[in-house]
Image (cartoon, rainbow over all chains, first blue to last red; front, side, top):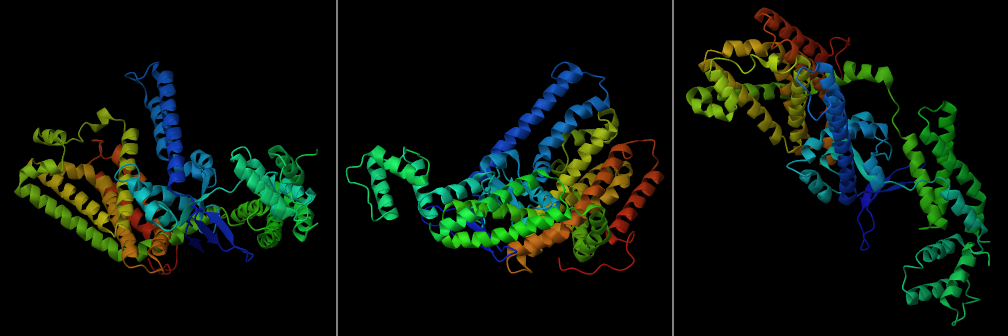
Length: 251
Length: 326
């Protein structure tokens, strides 16, 4: 297991887990930015949910924004306890229920894993969240953020204690893999070249016309050196040629 | 058709079935043995495909998708099983006594530090009464100077149940703080323990000056024996964490710290449970004037004995726990 340092092009740092089959698994480590983004979303969710519960509870019990004198114990508990418990224990409860994720982490595209690459157990999740008390010192998670910036695997103290780390969530493979594979099989070119063609077509509109023409010509020449594209082929013509190769244009 | 293209075409249906299988498993709470074996078989098969894809199609989306599918299967297979009742039994029977046994020396040292701090607090407030403002609020000082304790009418202000919840959550927070601050080479833990000792000694000295220390003792004795013991145990856990960072017993400090937390985790849970009990006593019994001093002492002593039994594992085991390196 280990990490590789990020390169010149800001490649994400990787955490390599030894697979049980001898084939290693590479996980991309999430940086402080993804962490902060996820936390801010989660903080808003738990704050708003707690306030909403309090507001509705107060309206239901007292008809206003305060509890009238003489209200019994249980209505008070029902109004305040879920809001406070939900706010304080949001992270451990939701991480346990969502297997290392929270709504904020899901939106940020990250998840918590243990050092074997699996979902952490209840004990690890409780420990990493108990250490939030230290990571949040003295304010705005300063200790946790500094720790993330200086530690090798971008972990805060809670993660060190629990043996967990935050990794970038791999894309869901609902029907992606078989569609890709079938397209690769049906296309008239090598899958690696097909991949380049598809990436170029996706970025076609964003690229400068001169740049995309240069890239398309070079790619078509590489794919079929015997039949290079005519020099006077238009921008639209190049795009159509690429689409035909990718199997996305039947004309 | 190139070799890579032929290979990808031939495996497309297999990968499709695998991705559907993973999606199905993610939605299931429990899986059968057959399903687990099928998942392992898929994992092996996918590992072979991934190795081929990395060689034939490096950096392509097909490989990236296979990596993602492999990571999902790996995570599913490596997910820890729910131990159920047996795991809980092992936690209380073995893990808690083992952890407590491993740090018994430090519990003694931290208790000594706490007692020394309390004695220092007593002496300081006794010798310089104006220093009480450092350990007590203005309201508390005015109440005591008026000949009453701040705990006297507490039940008229807050119901016992809410009081318990407030107290136990506060105590759990202090204990977790004492534990977690141990990460800073144990210094944070020492400050927390010393501060709490100073405050306790100072407050007792102040109430003693107004002939109220007996009544304060009466209030504290039922819950305080376990509460203060747990704070000392939490301090010992913090000191152990500090030592794991100062003198790592694993190749790196991070690994040593993580190993220490794994060992101490069950004891931290036990401390939290004990504090729940202490909080209930502090909310329902301590402020209730109908309980005489004798009853309070008996309750406090019995709960403290129960704590010792739970920490030593005497309630469950027949043999001594195997020692661990903290």
